[in-house]
Length: 109
Image 1 (cartoon, rainbow, N blue to C red):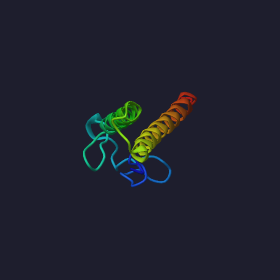
Image 2: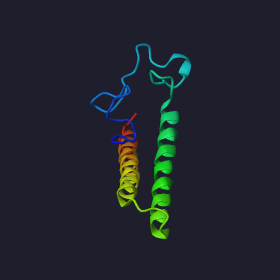
Image 3: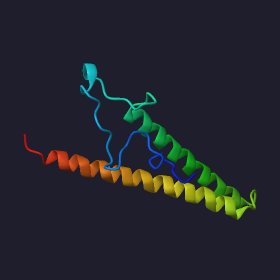
């Protein structure tokens, strides 16, 4: 799993890092949804669940290795690397969102 958050393969996000608005804005005041019908909130929650699942798998693999129930060190390292990558990508996403929020806060009306 080289792209745990699905950012590399696309999904409507252009190179500048945002989804361009559809012509006519947001109909009826509803939040815009991606082409697959998922909102940003749904996608973010799924991503958090996936990162949590990967962390739990890595923890379980390390515990099994320590207790002798498991002998394959390579797969334990792979599981911990996947969990670490997912966490780092979530942390990067959070940092980018905070930067955008800070920038919006500084805008004057």
